Image (tube, rainbow, N blue to C red; front, side, top):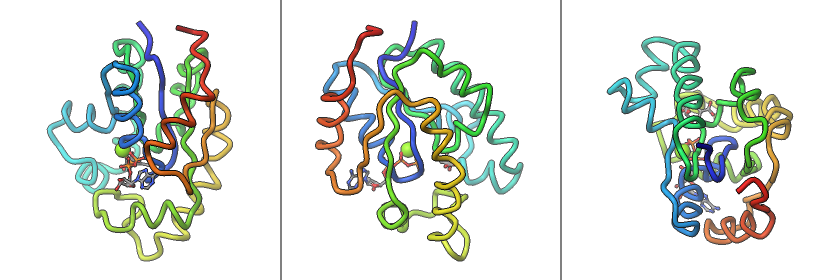
Length: 171
Ligand SMILES: Nc1ncnc2c1ncn2[C@@H]1O[C@H](COP(=O)(O)OP(=O)(O)OP(=O)(O)O)[C@@H](O)[C@H]1O
Ligand SMILES: O=C(O)C1=C[C@@H](O)[C@@H](O)[C@H](O)C1
Ligand SMILES: [Mg+2]
């Protein structure tokens, strides 16, 4: 079993929003590794980050991604930092992987009103977001088979762009 599509990108790129819409359009189910970590631990992601630290969250996330890739046949959204794991990047080889990109200004705008994102909770979310994006862009691109820049698109338009460019050659 293998996901039809894996969706990744930075916070606010729309992995959850667009991933759900993509699943609806394709008539398949949606799964989100952030949600899987919350379900498995019974804890909020911000609590895991604050109490146990980021490495503990990354270990849980790596397991959630491996399980999702092995068990899920619909659309699988990964946490924004999942690509930081070399093991995860290796596991993504051969999958249809959509990179939803978003620039700093729009990414901060979309995530700015939420306190649920521990990595962006500091004093300067803009510089934090930019640093995160700079560090991760090569990693997202290393594993992606399709990239869509979402800044000027509504979620349904992002879905249209993904479906227009994704060729389901792998089934
Ligand atoms: N293309 C878009 N245009 C406008 N708003 C968007 C778009 N995509 C997502 N949003 C909005 O941005 C916010 C963040 O979207 P979403 O939660 O889907 O991002 P995410 O990539 O799953 O983030 P995270 O990494 O934190 O899980 C939501 O309020 C959502 O409605
Ligand atoms: O970009 C990140 O590192 C994160 C994104 C979210 O999806 C969550 O996985 C968590 O808040 C960390
Ligand atoms: Mg999400």
